[in-house]
Length: 326
Image 1: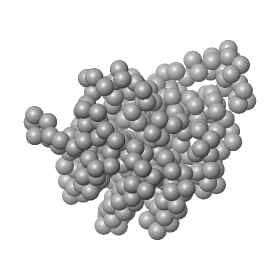
Image 2 (image 1 turned 90 degrees about the vertical axis):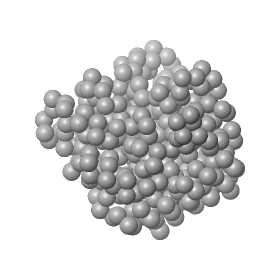
Image 3 (image 1 turned 180 degrees about the horizontal axis):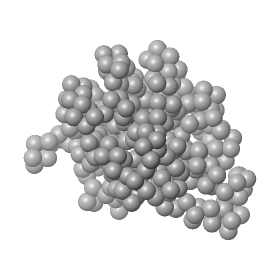
Image 4 (image 1 turned 45 degrees about the vertical axis):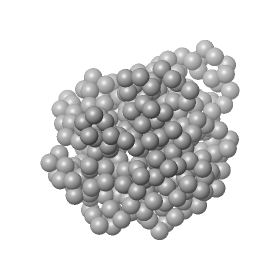
């Protein structure tokens, strides 16, 4: 079995609403006729047909040999809008995901979107999503309209998440105030990975992992640069008093308890992650159907690794089955 933990849906109604409630977002077409989303005039997202077409998605899954997908929205998510609009967008997305899951219960499960820019609304939608809609967890941005996840403003939400032993998939967002990534489409290529790395480091150094130990964290894109900065983060703990103020163990002791999806498709990178966290902490991801995603490559990149079949099974489905309650 193969379970894809990192893939995305973009309902047509959500895309249409971006142009009316999005701050700086616009929906237009490029020179090749593709529908694209721009942010402050720069290309941000290409809308591909399977983002809103379950039949096309299922056909692609069958061709790639993927049995189940955990559906989720991606950036720009809903945090850019006013609180009421954010809640409405989250409800729209979650209702669409839930409908897909009901129509194809053996192929899809859902990861809900919550409007964490308004924590009270986020708690309200979390309760609905996990209850009425039978979602298996949530997806959160690596920053919430510029605010970091360890901001005290969000603490009541994360306390409830800890109480529920919630599965939280951290997906990158545009790093705030980084103009250098607006050229060459560097925001998704580079900026996203920076922001995931920063989010993970702040979750650890802020003490959140100690204080809220029952949240189950999944990091997209192999955790950004986390596996490569593993020893540097531990060195910081040893060298800088500020890095020891809120935690009692080296960062690696906490980062070992995160899960890391395989959206990289680069064998040396996957091997580095495996040698750092082990097969027990890796899950299959494709970033499908983004133009930079690769559903068949997600599978073949894992199957091509020189690992024991039992380890490949954990990465391809075993860990995801446990996390999603399948």
